Image (tube, rainbow, N blue to C red):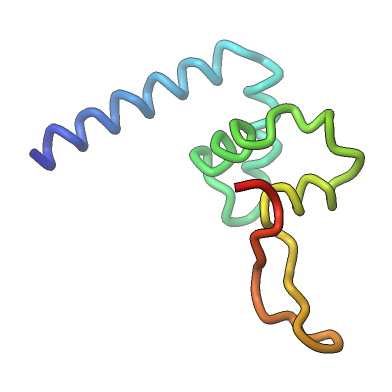
Length: 88
């Protein structure tokens, strides 16, 4: 069963890579995101799928808030973690 699931995952990953490589804008955006440390191909694709082209955000902070990547401040200048305040 696990072998079957792993085979399906690999097939889906291959299909996603083929789709990304067919679209030059998408390919370039994924490539740019992958320059960020700790951002893999998969994470970049998921991020773009979630945020789209990002044109409807007025700035990067708005996009980060939507994605739930803004730090939550508990007291003066003390970051306690990442909060999810954007859309689910």
